Length: 387
Image 1 (cartoon, rainbow, N blue to C red):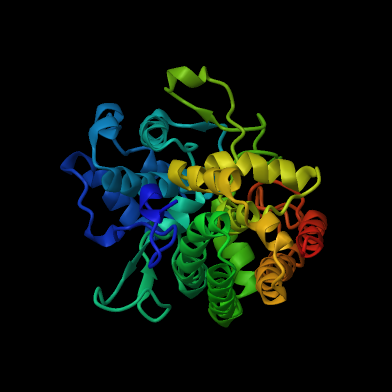
Image 2: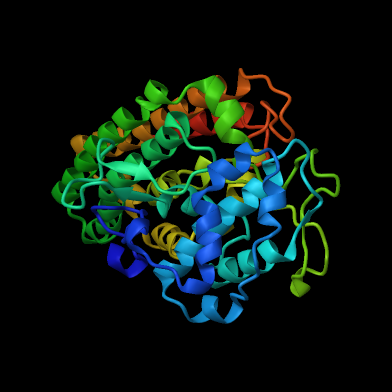
């Protein structure tokens, strides 16, 4: 396995190989880009739907099929933010997404093989750029390109995720290498790669630990989180989903789609695949299995191929090298540690908050599932599968 075959790299991991600020969309998308660029201002008027209803439908079906991948992914970022703002930008969500947003949203998402709402890839992976193009992908040199309302808390929340994803490139590259290393029975190289992964996890954890510096839990819950919910399991939507007007293939039926969530990140699922970490059936496992289909197609394929081809666990179990086993277990413990920190943040940023914002339930994740109980269970299952 090689990362380049999946559009990934050691330097950027799952992050886009391009930066969104240098992508130029065609002129027929100018009004969309203008609205997306002023989305904060439109939301502040309190009648964002009035303004978005005036956008033309640029008829993207043919363009979306033929345009460069980078352009379609950029259009996906802008349209998915506009769609989320339309649904959650006023006090009561609508039953319908109007055709001028629904049709282009479905056109670009169909081309990318993703659901027609904001995905993690549109929120984080494709929605960043460096200020100094000769500098690193680091917190002091990156910014969030497309915003909802903007501000430190929203920017920092996404920037932390971007920094984590960049650091994870080492995990993905070494995971791909470990597939062949394990099959070749090379204890020393396997140990070296695992130790390197453990060190990368430390850097990831250091980024994750900085979340509270500039993203306040109260502000996150009331000013950041409301816009990223989906349409599934959300009592604020009267039909149990959102109807996409003018999209013939959807037949006028409500679409119960999952919201953007860090659980759509492919880092931990790739590590679970590599180390063959399994989870017993529960609502969160079913939810995570469902979320797999919300990831970019190549990221799905990478996880699936890792799971299909890795023999690392059996190789380590059969090895006489205690230091190799220690290195394997250290990486497993890092995944469990990451899940623990996720659990702590879920508690402080969501579960302990209380609000009356439509669809913003502190007991339910943005993906639409009661999360606290099952996050604990998955963390404990992860830690229980050491060799």
